Length: 327
Ligand code: 13P
Ligand code: SF4
Image (cartoon, rainbow, N blue to C red):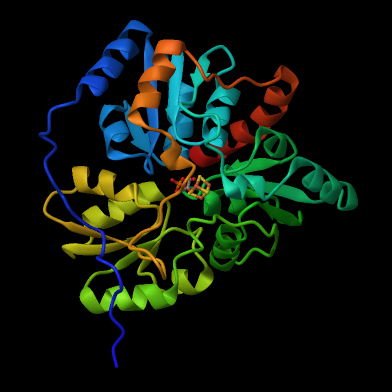
């Protein structure tokens, strides 16, 4: 007997964005102008925030935007490690985050003292850190990568160096497989991405038999193996635009569907389900609300600050990533 879904699938048809902005959104745009601020938003933010952002993108795109902006203030709508990265590359600017509690379970899975102990026991190790980590972990790393450039970065690590990849074992395993480079993997993972299962995807595919599956590399290996394409959130936009299919199953945090819906006309996006739910939301990303964004500009707080010695140490591997990623 065929198993059926126990919930309504989350399906978004693309739409031309003609809805007028709300009063709060208008107020945010006015405050932003007055303060010469730029609003950077990750693809997982709620639709109301994505609509008023100057730039919406993945961690790589956001890092470049943060590095090149001429604004005095960066209001970062994402999670703490992202805002911290913006501060690391912009010490002279004010970096605001709507909720300081917007952390990341993946980042938390690699505490600084544990990485320091590992490095002490393996002094020759070359540390490649996924950008989803704290400034302290970045400062102990040799180079940073994102899901958008991980392959390129790992391929540039000198061949005679043994690599430790932190903190995401799933992304690390995917890069190791694709590049053929052996790496030690830190045992961390993203709680929101490991909720996707083969069982749940097989069930949704019964409803959409012709829809390709695009999945984020933070998903587990069995889910990645089922996907037609595995890539960062930004590359998902290109994949969905270019595929001839009109329906696509998108296996990542549900905020991604807002971006796809606004930018790709005439297609239908189906959220990747978990065993118990129609989609997976990151509780940290979803702490940012449109009211908090407005209040953050009014109060010029919460602000992300860093001791200068830590910032300098964390800047080196980020700079290396930005340079390697361009070439
Ligand atoms: P990217 O948007 O860089 O693919 O990262 C996904 C993610 O989980 C960010 O927290
Ligand atoms: Fe962290 Fe996962 Fe949330 Fe991204 S989606 S911020 S990796 S917990």
